[in-house]
Image (cartoon, rainbow, N blue to C red; front, side, top):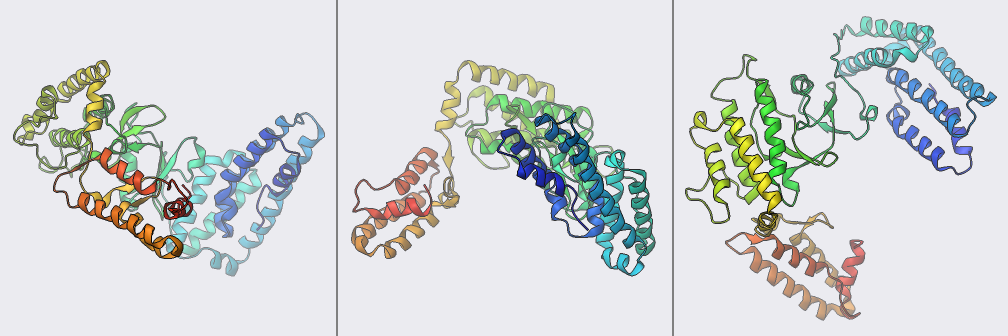
Length: 458
């Protein structure tokens, strides 16, 4: 079965260079990437309603850009698309009337469930753009697959989605299994708050995925500010007001929205307190608060653990320590309320804004606990692996083997000394050492590091 939009793409490719048309064509290809790559006839049919809508909009956009909207070209371009749709209908009618062919196309039970789900979703979501003949054909093929497979698909939730292309600025992330996807999506879809990562939809068949706004973990920022944490606290307060808690809150749930420049909660691993499965010993608001306190301590002061030190460390300010001590108390039932926490973090955020030196102090105290795990960002590999590559390059560059070997030996000696340290290393020290490994040689004789620069495209 042919792919819809062949005529349109040929027309766009044949046009002279035009930035707007180029963008239109690029967007069209991106949106139809999955549809174009689908070779199974029935699965391609399931994607047809969406493809028709995209192509109709693309035709009108291109005609508008070219100022041809009110000219004969508009009719001919749409007629070409209609002809392609009619050719597709002819093939599908033949498939519908050939039981042996149809049975060979429906696949196994998993494929049948996915196919029926996609056919139903396509008609519900995009069926308005189809002609009665196309709708009748999809309905007939749907019924035929049901009869052959004995698979029945129930009502689809409102949040069901198949492609992140339906929204701008979205990403997809995998989730462990269909059951987890369904339960988590049902909760996430309820949430609407500035400090909860936006949820757009989920695909809970076969390879289950969530579709949501992009973001990064707060741990990936150089400094998690109190303003960032205030945003996360607001999101947590919002959840608790609705009787929702985390199954096990950790720093991975504390995120940062690059687009909105605020701290947000991930929206993942949530559970209703009244769902009949939650016990006071396993989940709860007090346990959320306690875990939030430990996550703050880890993010702000780069210390990992399930309890605070007995005595306030010198690098933690007294008002910050008082907050964390109250949040992380062993008696979770006696911890602060979210209202108390919001107020206190708000005060700390104001102080941090007023006195930015405190933020610089935190940055200067950032440490690397395990040197073997530190990655050089430009390489995406550890220092140790980079040194192994350097040693291998020593053998390749015979002309300078003596000087290169001495250079490598010195670098390796310094690395071993740093790695043997019993104390965490200041991140600035580790970063400076990584730069020494990568800095190009000042003279041609030291061509080892120049070769390294070439190998890694630095």
